[in-house]
Length: 292
Image 1 (cartoon, rainbow, N blue to C red):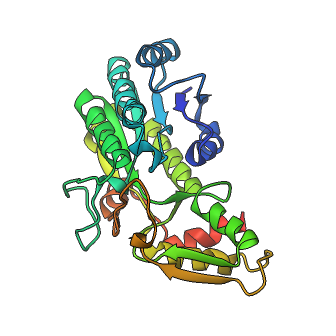
Image 2: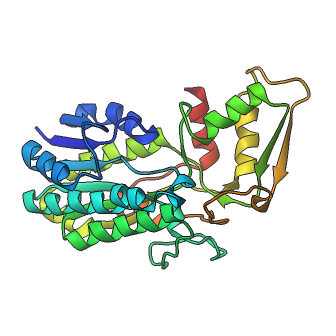
């Protein structure tokens, strides 16, 4: 039976992974404080004691603004920790599945980013996630780094915030100059489970030929304003304040510690071609997510 070590269970993606990966084998799922990505010695001991076939790292420092004032902690969790997991995976011939972000790019390209484009992060969060990618690659282990964008669920994240604002605010102002591809956490978890099934069904050489960084986000693109508009449309049966208005705004209208890329669209064609999957359009995925 395949043994899977899942790091991170409380976040949007980790919560979904618990459910999608359960049928795939023996899953050892841990979150802070049982596992601490900033504890190098503890991480090494965890991997050695559990001796998994597959490691899924769904934990990360994701507070984009707070990372600007806590760069050392963000780096320990987003960069050093994943590097250690990769090093230990190499020693036991395990496969590491790690997640990254569109925030490794500066959003100035003008067209969707491919895996061949050079990253240029604008924030501490983006920089430390890039360093995590680099550490995983440098380890020499068998790995899949999946870069995604605007991960959400009904439980938390942007969609949950929009629904909460709809219940409590008469006017909602959302930026319409940040453009990317909303991607449900459940979809990412299902994709991960499918990948693990493919790894299990094939020999080691199959994984070695396909290891690398892949863009894995919903197709199509929208602004955060357009995203919020569709969330409200799809949740029209929910209570909203009388006369409520959704208004577009500019990123420059809001002062935040971290700079965010404006157009961080990802091109996922290489992932689809390599693994024989079709990633749905963001709006279709949102419709399904809102039905949950």
